[in-house]
Length: 153
Image (cartoon, rainbow, N blue to C red; front, side, top):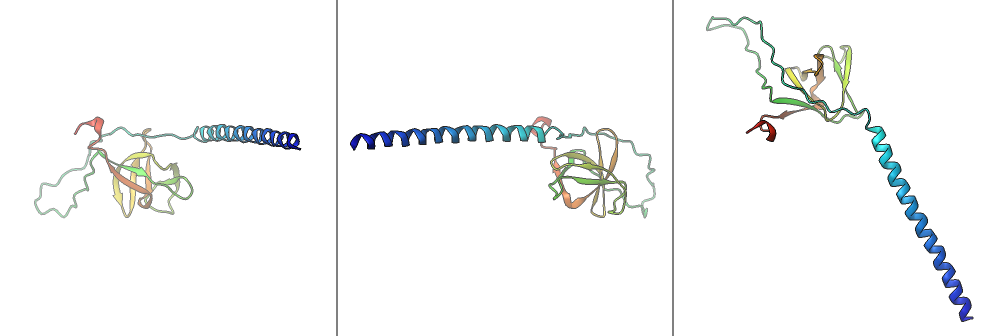
């Protein structure tokens, strides 16, 4: 009777060893599969870092001291916009600062763009290829790059 008990314990131990090996195999398989999924889902992800562009203004400045002309809001090239998370994973870029304006492109969360103007809660952004458009201000955050480690202090 004692021999049967030892034999049955040995068989149970072998079965649990097989179960452990199977669990380890499944864990490794899931881990590798997740890694492949992440790599494949990131293949279309792009990080956009715009270089500063400076455009000469052709606007004439009035020499009259009491000019009724409103001075433009000066934007530092070191201050940029970072696109925030949205419920759909992108933010529409429009021709004009309006929800009814035509959509001309999309930007993704985490991307960073220069902007030239702020109007009624909308920001006018510049793409690296020269394209430009408007994004809604609720989904962007101003970031100050003037104190970046690699640009000096």
